[in-house]
Image 1 (cartoon, rainbow, N blue to C red):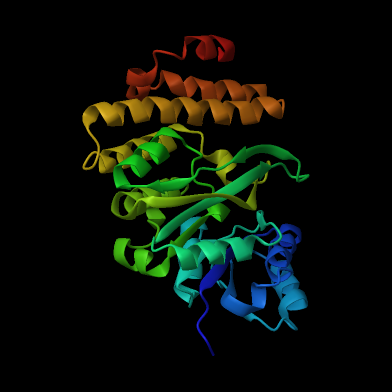
Image 2 (cartoon, rainbow, N blue to C red):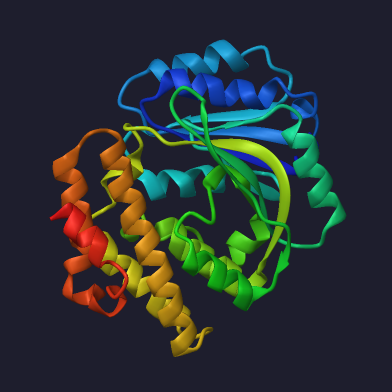
Length: 300
């Protein structure tokens, strides 16, 4: 059996209907059975996701693996489990609530073969649960390590999971996701990867990132997460000047907190909206508060 070029790893958790959409978005593509493999690491509490996998993939000619976790691993550990199962030279983590667009694999594989980089970032459409487009997000060109770090530490949503493709050898060098960090484990990983390899950005739209009320990231807007992110910024201090780091923090936390508050406001959850805005009042964020007065008053 030939080793695949790309392993598309789906960490599944209790979303069988969306898992079906994610899998079909991969195997319906012409290139799907040729140079890729599909990995599903299932952390679900019932057998519905397993049934979806068996129904769709039992007759698919491509390479695939399904692994059901007997004990719930949790988010970051499930990501790592999927990566460990992968045989491909590159890894694409496709969450079960996201999906690829038609012909995206052809664009991804073409870039992987034509470039020598180990970390790639493609264009993405941010959509709601009805697949209505909320915004486009894309960049173009190679960002060397320092520029890549400034970018990801200035923009809390610069990297959307289905849009990033990483060489497995890069994970083997920098290590897997830190499972004790919970939700900010992805940001910490991007800091490690970008500080070593930079990132090659293609403006080709390959995937959709779904924003919805069931997302595991809806609960990240709290003081514990702020403290974890601040520790990640400390990690980046080895590569950026104090002035660069301070400017990145201001931009990052303004965007992070306001984005979380807007999510709640859009859903009519006024209490949660105000609670998130009050994160600006944390003692550890007073150094970035200068431009927040209007928002604090609005949430107060």
